Image (cartoon, rainbow, N blue to C red; front, side, top):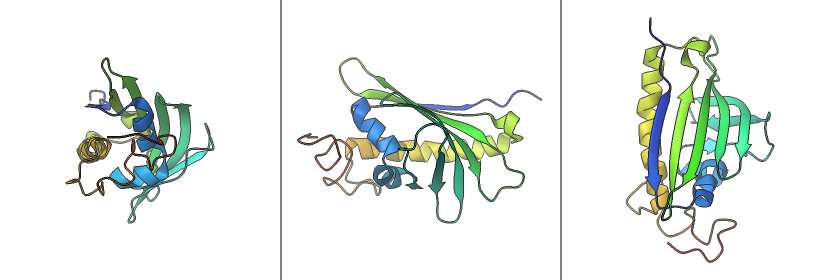
Length: 165
């Protein structure tokens, strides 16, 4: 049996790393492209939970480097046995503006998960990343974005007073 490869997905956006960071870590914005999320203000070692309504993923924050890297463990709360993997978000500024967002979801074999579980997650992550990029672009046609009010980078986001799209 060959090693189960991590999920690695990359998206470029015109949003700044600071705005993308807000979209990855502020619960009110995570909810607009992914689901209800717990705050990350507790720091490394504190619980982190994503509540999808009919299921939830929980784990611990492993790393926080503001506007650069956010990592946490991921395990479905109702799964037996518990299969804990690791989700890593990395942000990199692009020359000329904007940033690159990299998602890495790894640790499938160590968790006892199989390729089917990995592939299922990859399919969902594709859609969620598309929603994230739409939110960052302020796409009014995206159901996760209500248009001009409250998208990261707009004046309604803390730290972005006076920002324009």
